[in-house]
Every structure is written in structure tokens, then in C-alpha cells.
Length: 208
Image (tube, rainbow, N blue to C red):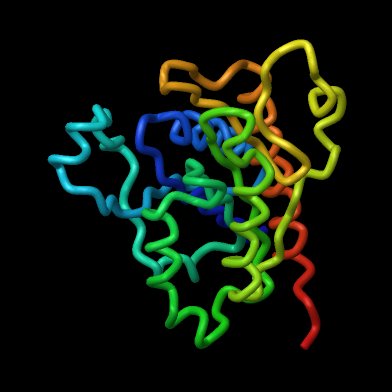
């Protein structure tokens, strides 16, 4: 059996999305025959700005990805913080650099899910995912939502919980809040869920 490669590509300014990404990776790697790899997109903010916003150092065990490396993967999970209801500009800049892949439709037919972090309830827990789908559509990628397959965790109302039928999510609040156990469970589940679908599609390719 050939290995199914899942790339978890993320941008994280204050660490919340990185925490979610590592759990997504754990979930994906729990699927037999799947190799899940973490990647970061390049930073676009200057060191001066990063110091002003008190951003912690970027993970030194996660390499930066180049657009052309996306073709190596069989499936994807893209993670990013929200900015006014859309993905952070760093991630949008990365997608903007994939124009050659778009021109050749090199990513068409590959499954992809999204996960995210917002500040508060009005910060785009659904809108951030919804607006991100446009990037996938132009590449011909297959958006893989969670639906309500996560089960009872989707209906939790007794505690603050990010995420939706679109994918896993967390709330950062003023930056001090960290992903909860339930949010991390959903991230793990999403990684496993998308990995299973990616593996199935790889082993049963569409006929031409």
C-alpha cells in the first residue's frame, strides 16, 4: 500500500492555530498508511511589528512551505486565524502565490479541510471558513466539511467552544485563552476524518 500524504499548512501569530494544527496532525497520523506533515506559510510582518504585537517565536521544528510543494500532497488541512471574517493576510498571500498551480490545475480533485481561530463569537467562526472556500474552488480542490459527524461535541452549549460544521476552531479572546480539551478533540477528529477521506480518494482515483 502506498503512503497517503496529508499536508497540514498553517499560519499562527500567537500560537493558537499552531496548537490546533499539531492536534490535527496527530489525528491524521492516527490513520494507518497516512503520513501527515506540518508546514508554516511565510511571515509577512516585519520584526518590528511582531515585537509590538508580542508575537512569540515561530516554531523551529516546522518548515516553511513553498507553493510548488503543495503538489506533493494527496490532501490538505489549512489553518489560519481570522481577520475581519477572512483568513489572515499571510495565508492569503501564500494562496496568491499559487497562480502557477492554478493555471495548470495541479491541485484539482484533491480534498482539503480548514480550521481556524477567532477572537470572539462575532469574529467569524463560520464566515472565516466560508470565505476560505473560494481559494479551494478556484484550484478545483474538494472541500471536506465535518458536517455534524463529530457527534455530541457539535451540540455543546454549556462551555465556550469554537468550530462548526465547516471544521474545527478555537477562540483566542485577548490572546490569553488557549484551545480547550473539547476544541482539541474536534481538531484531532478533523485530522483523522480528512485523512481517511484522502486515503480513500487516493486509492480510488476518479476515472478520466
